[in-house]
Image (tube, rainbow, N blue to C red; front, side, top):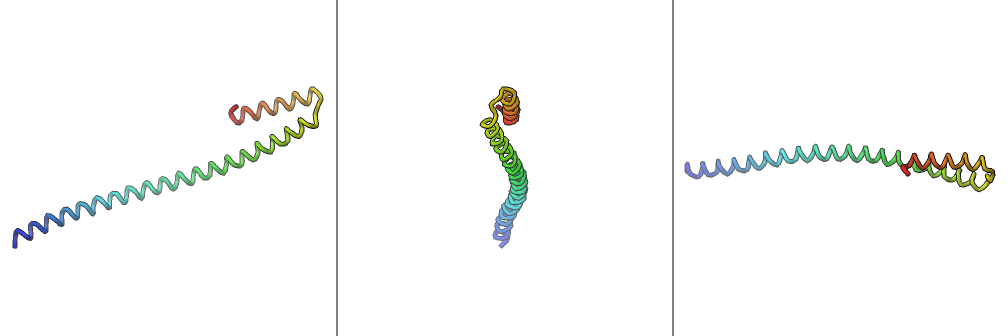
Length: 93
């Protein structure tokens, strides 16, 4: 009977250790999920900002293209070229 009690005690200790480890893993995973959720929120915000910036650049390109078709004098073309250069620098070209 004592032998059975010792065996059961040892088995319970193993189960307790496993449950404790699982609890620690769950806490660690929960923290990882929280961090991932925060990263996703930040990335979503950055994507929104980039989309807005892309829309502004697209509109600026449409305006420049329209001006290029309308303007043919040298001064206007030089001014337009400066705007295109500034836009290129802004997007990293």
